[in-house]
Length: 259
Image 1 (cartoon, rainbow, N blue to C red):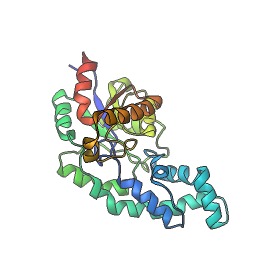
Image 2: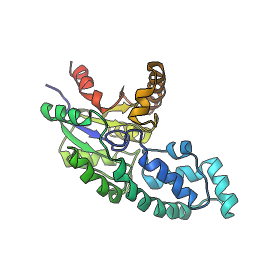
Image 3: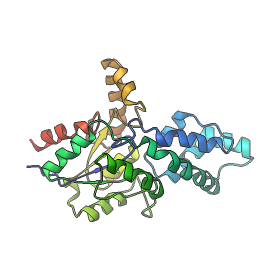
Image 4: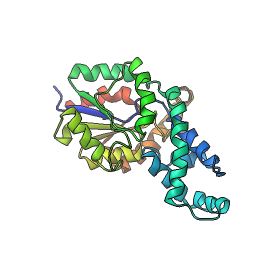
């Protein structure tokens, strides 16, 4: 028997979209539509945060803030974040379903959780309008969590705990230490920490690694180890209690924790 009652998963980079590619390209394109060339690294840096906050973090970073002022004649303001956000959301809605493939081994992992009697919920940095495009694609692959708390569902999102609190209510599970939060990003791990949950970071499938399954498979073991080490260090610094390669490795971790 396990003492855990529920696992709350992130979506992109954790359960779907290995490498977290759907939002990254859209951020670049959204900024380009305002005459600003953002790099892929700049687009990936705040990943996991609610998308309005993500855009704010990008546009207020020194290089992009200076570039915005050069192009638009004034320092970026909240209204400019709103403008970019209004472009970003429909762009992401159009492409997100194309990236909604489950991470390899995710379905088998879900079957294992079901056999253990563990409930499954979810939170995400995506808005609900974006997730509405993802839900049917994920369901067709066998993934329909009991809930999904989206970035615009509550007054405050990640890295605060409110999304996790909503999961406790939706799934009727408590105390927090009986719930595991699994995520590939710093804000997502911080969300679990803030709520008092056990936190698990995924290293190879997520935004930090930023590679497809085929690209990961083509690496040498030493190269994979280097990515594991880099991602693991970042996620542990954010508060991750444990790190695994992908969600496919969660059952083995549960066995160790239960023992």
